Image (tube, rainbow over all chains, first blue to last red):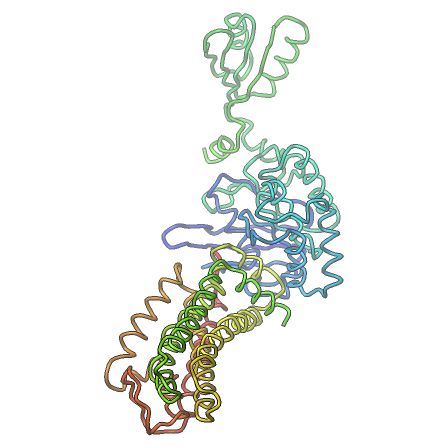
Length: 307
Length: 249
């Protein structure tokens, strides 16, 4: 086995006329890696390939050096938290987890103790007696996470693990994922929200239309499009005076007055602009009320990368 | 065995178990009605009535419906609920999954099927008569054989069809209903006919006058039993082939 926990070579998967993955290539080692992409980018297909649920039409998938499709021995070393809710709704959460542990090959006593440990880890010990169908979205999300970590896997595949979590739960799960990545495991985390993963890892894989669009640290990716104009919306006390000053600034491509106290700046040097705004606001020369980046959502980032 | 029991419990806990109780209850109510309202029937009449009327109906309709209820959902329900995901991503080999599921579907189908036949037999047949006891046992064994083949058939359907119960009903009506009642050797390709052949061989072949007009070729009772078991084995193999390459999309 190479030094990588996950290796994908030219992986292509079709669902009839729809392409799920199109020659996807990546090598992933230990630590947390984030897979980012808009809905329909192929994240879930990739997870299904890695989890052995679907077989690629072309290319090669290796997890811990083995082909995952129909490889139950390997599943002992993989934990998969899916985006979908695979629950038998009428079952009690704790009993369901125990059953999952039994399917993982543990005896009744071991299954029970692993269930309790997993419930404790995801903060669900007190709610384990509830029926799965009666659990909130956040609880269900944590139950999915519990079944993924129950057997202490070496590779964790987490598909949108933060969906439906409230801020407190989100923080707890972020800490948990960070901890798992820090303990020598390989964690691949899919999300379509950039700021969620920024707090966990800076190792990013950007996916779009089944292809790997870019790979690297957040800094590397940002550097990649640093020269592309970015738009910021500002609310200032004197927009006309501010617009005139902004037009003098290096990198400014244009300024639009949007009415009232709002204006929009387009710049190739967002760093310069932000420095200037900070300086002017601190000195009192500019009464700055609000700054809103208009193209920092993931779709815009993809747009920049594609452009 | 632990997983089989788990799957069995899951199957029996389904809402459709209501229909199971209804089917067994209806079969029993029918025989109770005949027993208590047709008071002019003597022991011999009741034996003929069961052997030629109630018994074949139970095999061809009730056993088929019970097997359809459970075997179709053994996999189909898991696929529909996406819980199949958890089975396929555990260190739980697919061969064992098939074995445990098939066993659970078979127990859920065969047990109630035998009960649905045994209760009317106990009610209608004059069991002090040794011949009637033989008839009762033969029918219960035929129900077992038929439900074994049916559960394998519908297990396979449930692994492929998006609306398995509709496909299974189509198969049952189309194949068992039409082919099973056509004159000629084509009948031999139906489960109900093979079960009836088994009965004909075990219960008085010389007086066998099935109202379904089934052909009963010469041969021992083992032939139809082996045909049904061979059919079951073939279907289980087909299910294995399907499950081995099954992808959860």
